Length: 169
Image 1: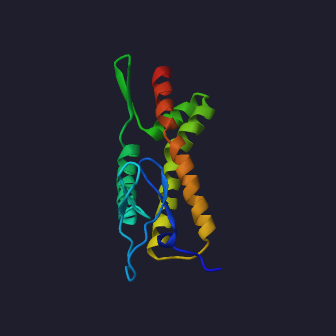
Image 2: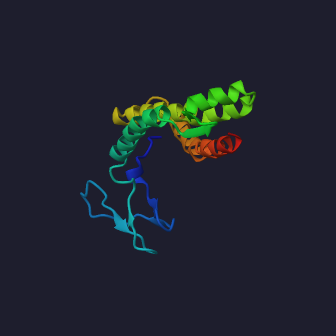
Image 3: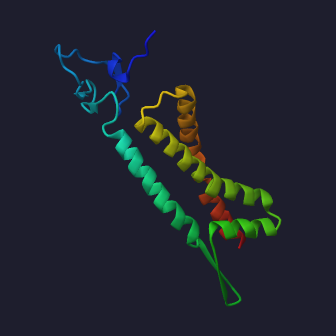
């Protein structure tokens, strides 16, 4: 059985109110299905988000460019007895590890270093596979995307850990 493209699917979901509706019939000979209005809320409904690959690539490049300054600039400055000490994420991890708080150091390291790098590399692979129209292991690529989406919700846990670190210092 041939796999159908999303453009051939008979139903779509409104991005605003989540109503699932049947795609209206188009005149014969129409090549591309234009967007149409949701019957409930009037929002524009598409089979796919317009320019999604270009937007994803732009966000990915922004993430790459912002990742390095985020890890090179200090996130905390502590002054003790007139001596100021600036800490980056990595020096904070080292500080936590040296002071016996290795579980907290591991959480900060994984959430602040490992997860963002893994997400950037994985998303870059997915974007390139879509750009090159790869048909290699589509289920694995879909699973990779779902994992990235799931982990994305929890990758901000390091912000809370930094607040705990500030309280400890």
